Amino acid sequence: MVPSPADLTYFIEVAHTLNLSRAAERLGISQPSLSLAMQRLEHAVGVPLLTRGKRGVVLTQAGRQLHHHARSLLQVWEGVRTGAQTSMREIRGSYVIGCHASVALHSLSGFLPGLMAAHPDLHVSLRHDLSRKIAADVIGSKVDAGIVVNPVQHPDLIIHPLCRDEVRLWSAVKKHNPSVLVCDPDLVQTQSLLGKMKKAGFVFGRIITSDNLEVIADITAHGGGIGILPAQVARRARKKLEQVAHAPVFYDEHCLIYRMENRNVKALQAINAAIRDFFRTDGARTSGN
Amino acid sequence: MVPSPADLTYFIEVAHTLNLSRAAERLGISQPSLSLAMQRLEHAVGVPLLTRGKRGVVLTQAGRQLHHHARSLLQVWEGVRTGAQTSMREIRGSYVIGCHASVALHSLSGFLPGLMAAHPDLHVSLRHDLSRKIAADVIGSKVDAGIVVNPVQHPDLIIHPLCRDEVRLWSAVKKHNPSVLVCDPDLVQTQSLLGKMKKAGFVFGRIITSDNLEVIADITAHGGGIGILPAQVARRARKKLEQVAHAPVFYDEHCLIYRMENRNVKALQAINAAIRDFFRTDGARTSGN
DNA sequence: ACGGAACCATAGCTTTTACCTATGATAATT
DNA sequence: AATTATCATAGGTAAAAGCTATGGTTCCGT
Image 1 (tube, each protein chain N blue to C red):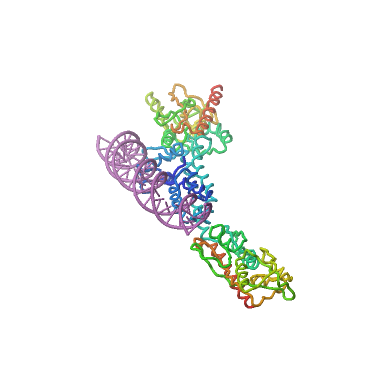
Image 2 (tube, rainbow over the protein chains, first blue to last red):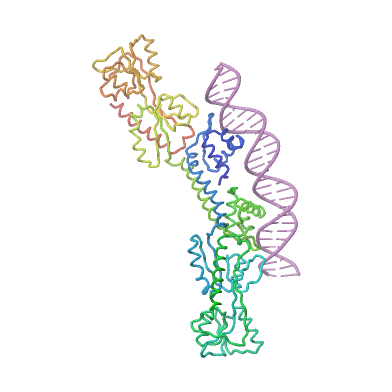
């Protein structure tokens, strides 16, 4: 059994004065209460701590041992409280950041190294998945912060817009196969564009699918077909891609999301700031180009 | 405010199951009680620890920190508790042994080195005074064990006879001054013998006093007068002393004493055994001489 | 020697705290 | 849409901790 911290502080005072009556006086409780408290403590430890005499009490060997450790134990106890508090007030702890792998490729390297260097007690794990799954995991508290596209409103969620992007059709500059579509069918953007194109009468003979946008960009760049890609991915392809004219466009909004109750967590504020800083400067740079 | 130990253990279970209802079940309390306990804990710490959801609860960052600290706190306490217990069950700790300096001179060197070598975690401090003061300090718990002469019975005291001795009058073998008495007047033995001799008509012109029996023995051995000495001290004088015939004798009983409540303390049992062993073998040797 | 003071333990009572049952509210699941 | 699962709240009850009064020792001063 674990004693109450109050009984421990009582014991420290008793060990100091070696007199229950006087210790009770100094502690602001009655002598019988202190007597009972010491009995409680002895029961919790399992061995006698005090030898009662008519001129006061003396510590047993076990009592001396406990007295020796009692202060540090109370310090640990206090540390339990303050440790939890500072985890909200200081930039430290372990956090999970989720985003689509393609987003990670073009943004994480821009702010993560600086963030890690600035805050040595900050630990980050990454998790990559579709935006809507990341968003679900943020809502479900499996992920602390997410960089996602077009998140749905949610009462528990705080959403910060970061930058805009366009998903459209791309092709290689020189030759390409216009009857083959290369895309990730799991993306809502893909589905939306496909629907619009179907209405508009576009017809594709075959579809190559991949869940990796970089792979799609690469195939498209090598003339494998028409690719459905965000502009930010198309721009980073190894060979230059060009927009397919007269095709529908899906406008993406990249956002940072996290749960409401984390808005006061300093570490998440720091992550937040780092991400938004990066997108502000990066957005300026890419739009300037 | 400092969190209560019960609430901390509750929290550890909650952090493990992440489900208040199931945790309450395992803890043997009702779900509302656990809900309130977690609210108490959060109030005590000052920050939210859990994010309540309809599929259970999730730890906040502060909750994760608290979980970590709470477990280490319980571990530390367990260590302190067993430490206090084993201080009774193992041969370790710091103990005060009291005895008359003359007793120390002829006995401590016989068992202390072996005792210290056998038990590296045992610490001993010595305290020298008159037997009756040592006995009083044992009773008053200022001394853990005493080697004393003719202790009075006391309800809190355990008394183990060690060996017998005789206090009598001694003189140098060759010449000595029979009108001078050399003694320690603070010893009850001295007072008793003086009383008997006074009744029997012995008269001494002068008395040399000292509170050190070895000094008395030395003076006696050099012909300074008649000395009142225990046989064990007289035997160890630098020159041989002889008993004064037809003089009263005071029979001493050397005893080991300690307080009742220490009878189960392993370290004192070890000290006890070492002392009694020494006196058994030593007594055999000296009586054999 | 004797009365008072000092000290710790116990008893009885009161207040505070923790706990339980019943119920509510809401989201997830079937 | 009904049901289930989950946590929160309300109100009453039981346990715990505290206080006052008292008892039984021992110590100390007169």
